[in-house]
Image (cartoon, helix red, strand yellow):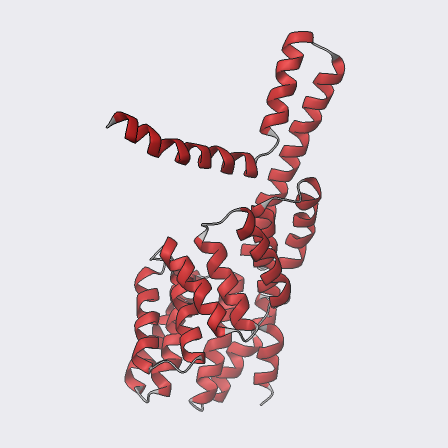
Length: 283
């Protein structure tokens, strides 16, 4: 029994070590340099080790700052930092994925797909990468592939709310029955990790309920989304306000719709919804 347990744990241990080296490749040369320095204490070895540590710290700081900028909707600034991180280590799956997230936020679905596929090739098994790829494929008008990417995310994490949302949207684009789309959206709502995801899912669900002429349910769901707005970060607020504006336009509440649509640019001037919100507001 002990032998079998060790046999099963060895591949897992090797996979863990491989992932650690992929995320922090500086560990191997740094360890080697430290061993050499302890044996011979040469100034050149100390200098190389110091430069390696500095490079790692710069890369880690760039990744951390870029992640925070993406969350605040400042995708262009994040991209500059990510280019620096990739210059220091071109095979960083985290930097590639963050660049994909930033591209998706700007509305550049082609670049987002490229970066996210590279990140997944280097580091498979990341539900957030698959879910983001699904969103890029939806933007590119490829719902079949988008559904596959969303399903891959849900296989890894059944509570990935964004994957539920994208799977619902892919299903709707492929002509899925209304109750199936609704089930997906409600599953996403049940799994929503915070106000941003919940507000967006509520907006999409409200639009779906309106299309099915379930006005009372749609209105209640919409009010729930509006109540969550103050708790959402700027890029998420922009997305939610865009969807609210569209729904209110469809309901004939033009003044309220324009208020939401006109606020999108101020919240996320570089975002994917800014130009679309302006176009809808002019109708």
